[in-house]
Length: 221
DNA sequence: TGCCAGGCCCTCTTTAGGGCCTT
Image (cartoon, rainbow, N blue to C red; front, side, top):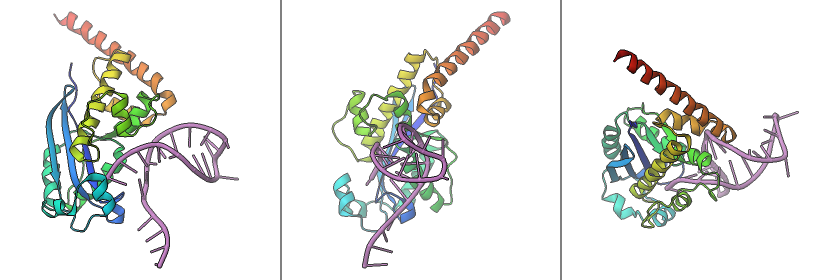
């Protein structure tokens, strides 16, 4: 079985939008290969201004901590090198994508990586979950947690396990050989009501392709 | 001074509104 590597990332930030001047204060990420977390990235960074009391208490990241950290540019440059062109995942990816792209733009770089959203996928795959907040899904899926939320590496790690659980579920439910990243992207985009039919059609096509490959192989032997 | 996100997605929809998610 061959599964494309993905990087699951999470930012803690000074607020909701880089358009309002907000910047990241921590990035955490895990690299997943073959359903396993094989590498991790975590760094605090200094946004260059005072962070609010609300963010300090939400994340536990204090002004003193970020004052001792390297500036955003330095950390984001290392992070951009680390992710390379690996496909990216985040929970409510629109949020993290805005910050990633804004910081890359400040470095004169741009994102080539495809990126998709674990929250949108989870709405299709776990419609029975009470809601689709990360903490609720972690409980819903029985994912191990030490109870720490709103720290970048913890959240990335839990989102990583959620991603693995969703890929597993798709493989089991639809009897798939492999779950390509593009399938997860499609799943996040199509209407929830059409998801099941789409996945069944995909699985049929995948079986047809693997049958004809097996047939070709038997002819060439 | 006061205000400021934004994309998804459902529905009592599409000439719109409001809840969900992320910090």
